[in-house]
Image 1 (spheres, one colour):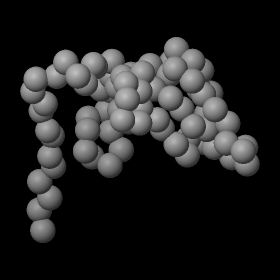
Image 2: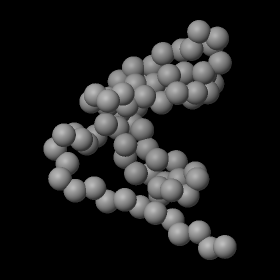
Image 3: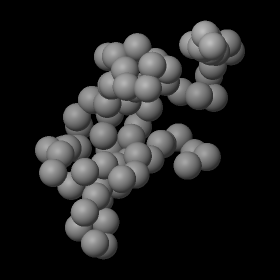
Image 4: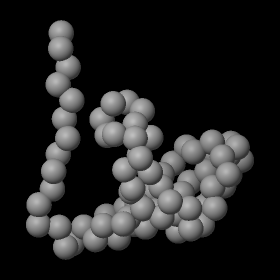
Amino acid sequence: TGGSQCEMFYVSADEDVQEGDRVLTSGQGGIFPKGLPVGRVAKVQRSSNGISLAIVVEPFVKFSRLEEVLLVFSLATR
């Protein structure tokens, strides 16, 4: 959002997401390992069509206090 919170869009409305839930990486896509803590759900909003949820996440890290960041890359073989 450009502020202190993040947003997740297009989460299936079938998911049982509650304020206070922890958000972890899924490991899908192979970019980040499964289970890394990302943040905590601050707000859950149902889309106007009722098909998906928009979730506001309060990150566990304070981005303004970071001095170094580790980037994780996957090297694809061709």
